[in-house]
Image (tube, helix red, strand yellow):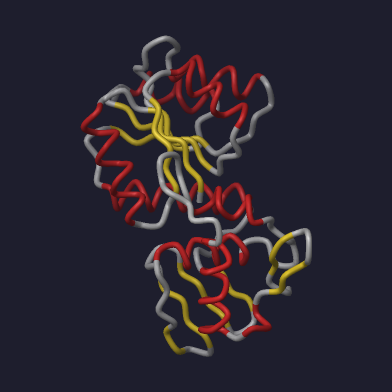
Length: 218
């Protein structure tokens, strides 16, 4: 999942970015509202983690502008503002959830997964396709009940495909899902991960639509 983190505190921003990257998320980190608005206009993200007390443009103003332009990106507010009035303002402006600092990274990741499920209209956290069962919460994949070990990026790539069975995703789109800014991308990275997944799951699991991208059959 490609995530934009907007947080002006360097210690919090760095720890959240590193923690989520270890869980397989591609996380881009910005420190002010104007830069975030530009990034959101030019880069496809699956989620926005938004602090409210930002320089140049507040998180609440950025959120209002996003919803005013009909941008439906899932937004999880992370802030030190813990009053009821602040929570109401954030939720009424269009946030999907609200988490007060300090918070545990495991709780943050759980809330992110819950927000994504709600946007996808899916209540069950487990993704099931045929004999494959993927649990994003535990980073576990089973095939016919047997565990299949995957690297963090293999898991993230397969999750992107399983979330949209039958829909081809281009190499560039898959790269966006598994790599953030500043992370070195080898020219054949996606192909290497696809080859490894096919070896573990069977070549028929992931199809290559020439000139279009990769998909898992529904």
